[in-house]
Length: 274
Image (cartoon, rainbow, N blue to C red; front, side, top):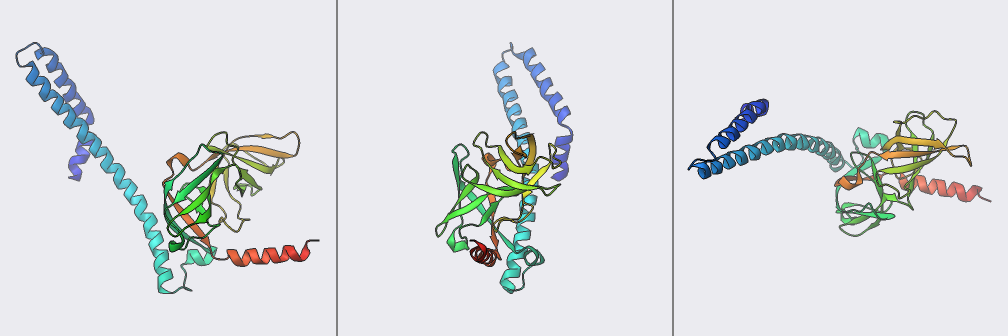
């Protein structure tokens, strides 16, 4: 079966030739008494040809998509199995970075409101709580803000009231990304000093200074920038790595050390604020 499919794909020019030949014959016989019968047969052949070529294309695309999903699921299953066997015996990945990833499906999304919100099909019954990070395979998506038993809502990166710590990956200079509601494909990175080296195409990632997002999660790439007149910083236009109109599957991230870290930071602030 595989060899047959490869033959069809490699012989598409020959098949096209046969189709054109069929059209030529149609022009010759269209005035004969059997024209109607011939046209019907030609249409059937053309439909069969197009249908099977479409099926073959979908078959190979589906195989590639399934392979990618399988690899992601394999990784998730390995982590889950480690947790089930012994709660303290985490996989090397969890032990090293202190984050646990859980997959979820987007069931509602918007990109045109100034305050875009996303709904996911995971909730309290799945261990989801507020302030968990949400990412996709492509990059940052948002943060969980409200949770019910079976669902949660996420403040999208495309929300003018939401901003996160970010940095230029190549130089480690950090600032804040925030949407300006102009275009859902772009976001603005500010507070990067204008003496730092910067180029179009530089990768922008999470900075790791928050207690929500792991460091190094992709946000996008520098598309354009200019120096602001009123201060010594760049205003940087970043093209998002995640197309929010295509968003379907995400990961919700639980940071195991978040509560301890936040308590320590709050205690320090209370002690040294005057």
